[in-house]
Image (cartoon, rainbow, N blue to C red; front, side):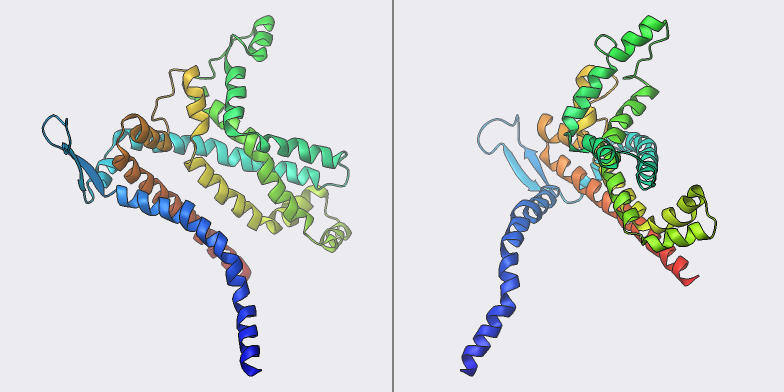
Length: 308
């Protein structure tokens, strides 16, 4: 009887781990193994003998850090990183600024149609990035865009939104339009979690709605702002679909405009999966380092604020 109880208790304790097995298998098959294989390929290369024709003329050999050295010295990859930096300097502050503004507006008592407004702002996030880029791409073309038709009727100049400096703003507009709703929901949910007694005390102390927003709401949703900033950095470093979709519409977008486009070009056009794997590993490490550094800085500031 004691043995039966022990077996029963052991089965109860092991039950949660049994439920974790399917998730663990999916994680290994579709996440860990691809990452490990990409890391393995980044240390390999193809060695060609003679003209590279015939059986055995091409052989996969150990390359060491050669692929990483070539990637770090690749000017196209470096220029793509600089372009993404300029793109991110536009996208992240504008998107989070709008998200915070909309969340604060929805949290006011006088707002009407709160549910409809919240859904309307969030809806662009549900549209796939390729579809959004196609839609905005046609709106940027002078021949088919209704905006340019209105400018032409008014006799106003028609800017080229897919060339030069406006190109960054055009790409950033797509990201801001699609990502503001998600960040707004995160911040708005944090605002709704603040106890009503806090706002009542502020009202009794004579705080105006503007003062309440600046001195109470924004400081209390700081963790949500950190979280949305963290997600925005990752999404910015991984931008791919927008410039790739708009590339057929303009000559200002090269096939290596962003780092991920460079990886795609080397892997599937130049057929050099080894160099592409090394570049992908570098991008992943850079993303992890930036994200970890930002989170560590944010946590240290939070601890300093709590100590005060």
